[in-house]
Each structure stands twice: as structure tokens, then as C-alpha cells.
Image (tube, rainbow, N blue to C red; front, side, top):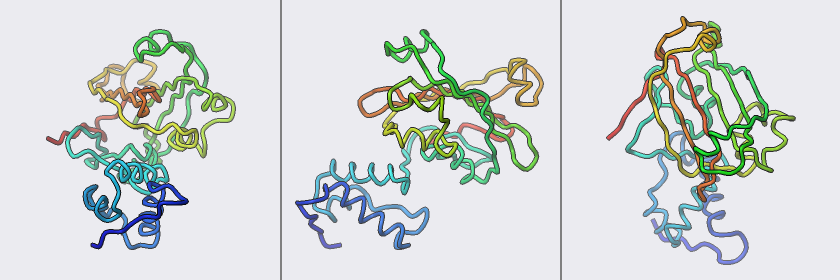
Length: 240
């Protein structure tokens, strides 16, 4: 493919790259699920630096048009299908074939000094968001998620106004809080009496527990979420 020179003036180069790729996606030139050209190919195509290409792809991701996936790592699956939680769990579960519905159990501001210390921040105020997801076909609960988000000016109205379109993923992106990196832990937890009642299972039943911390590019923590996942549907898939 011939090398393409982007205009130097006007719109920033990363945005130009994002807009051109967006046009290709929306026009159908790039089909759903199709793989974009590699970074090296995009560098050659647009005659820009690798860093500029990455910023363009990040902008495209922010617009909700692409997702990226690391080729080596661990991924949660639902009924054997990988969940791409970069697009938010509701959409990710739908993409995996789950007909899930979400109910909010709790949305309020709390103080948690221990978590603040764990995350290495001074502010002890967090937004506590607890949700249960159920199979819409039979009403059976499949997971509990307990998200803790450091209370910040970008999110201070969330406890009063609720989530944007009912989605935490959309709420965070609208606030400019886009995850750049993070870490995740997985183990087994025996259900407490309280959680067992919510999930409709016997107390002491083993559930897959994941704890996930996401951060912005500058290291600022965005969300710490603990999920209890029904092992009848969820598993941990490893690639190496």
C-alpha cells in the first residue's frame, strides 16, 4: 500500500488516523471483528511515528469502535467464550451469548482507609457500586460485582444521578477516565450466607473470585472491583 501523508495543519494526526479508520469501519470496508493493520503497517501507511499510531488507535478505542487484546495472558470466559471486558461487562456478556440483566444493589459514597492504603492514595472516599447479574431467561443470578471507585471531581455526581445509560463503562469514559493498564487476581471463595442468599446458592458454595485494579496512563487508580462468578458459567482461560 502506498505511503499516505497526513495533513500537518488542522486536526491532530492521531485524530486524523482515528477518523479515517472510523470511516472504514462504519462504511463496512472493515467488517465486524476484522483485524486492523499492524502498527508497523499503519506507520508505513500514514508516514507517522509508532507513538502517533498508538494515540490514533487509543482515540478509536475511546470512540468504542475497536478493542485491543494482549496475545498472552489470562481471560475470563462465559460458557467457554472469552469475555472482552474492555467494552464493559454488559456488552461483553452479550457478545459472549449471555442474555444477562443487571440489578444495582448499592450506589453510595463510603470511607475505606484500608483500600486507600492498598491503592497508594490519600483520599479515603470511594463510590461503592454493588451489582448482581442474572440470566434474563430464567432469573438465575450468575455474578456479583462490587466496584470501588476513588471519589473524584469527575465522578462526584454519580451517586446522585446514577450511571450513564446504566453503564459504568460509559460513565467512566464520559468522565475521561480511560483504563490504560492494571492487574487482576483470581482465586476461589466460599460464599457467605449473605452472598449465597443474593445468588440463590447454598452458603459455602465455591465461586470464582476475581479482583481487578485498573489505572490510567499516569498510574491513577480508576476502579477496584471484586467479582464473584458462578463456576457453572465462568472460568479462567490462560494463553501462553
